[in-house]
Image (cartoon, rainbow, N blue to C red; front, side):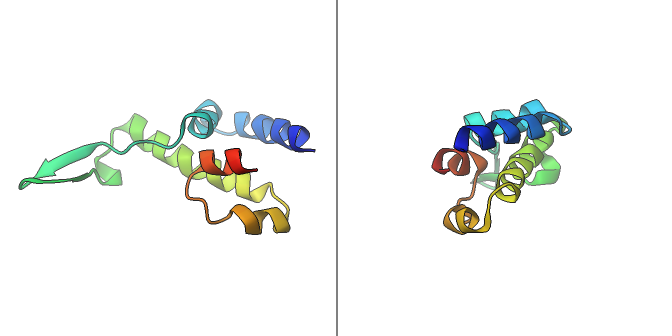
Length: 93
């Protein structure tokens, strides 16, 4: 039953805005946030500081996780809902 579900989820994601990026987020893992150094302190950039492409990628990471979680039955959702990124969910299911 997993193969059928996976195929349906992939088709659903591909029909979303930026569908290819959503699937790439699942396959490759989430955006690695760029770092900046301010006053000798290195920290990740804030969302509003990201380039347009990186911001879309960050949004796709969130959408990917959300799509996967919405497509799960409640008993499976309870087992995997604590994972932070879509790639972990995809591999765990």
